[in-house]
Structure formats: C-alpha cells, structure tokens
Length: 71
Image (cartoon, rainbow, N blue to C red; front, side, top):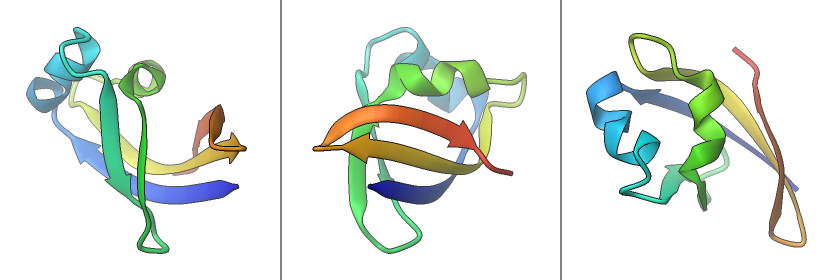
C-alpha cells in the first residue's frame, strides 16, 4: 500500500523524534487516512530547517517497506 503525505516539521519540533524520545510519527495522508510509522525513517531527510516535503510511504501487510521524498 502506498501512502502520500506532506510534512513540515522544524528542526526544534523534530528534535525529540531524532533523539528517540518519541518513537513514532503520525501523519494524515492526502487520502485522509491517519498513518503511524517509526520516526527514525525521517532522519535521512533532515536538513538544517527541519523535515519538509511530500513523501510516499510504502507498506506491505502493515509493515514498513520504504519512505521516499517526492518533492
């Protein structure tokens, strides 16, 4: 299953996720579904201003497969 969503989190807002104090992130997809996944998968997209962009989360049988930044 593919889930598409936008995210715009400042560096300060993302800090507890980066540090592992908060394990999971919850997003609302473009289709209106609420999806939860491990925040560690967003770390590679962190830039000095935070995590921003449009992403595709791929899952199979409710298991994480990949997270890609589309824009």
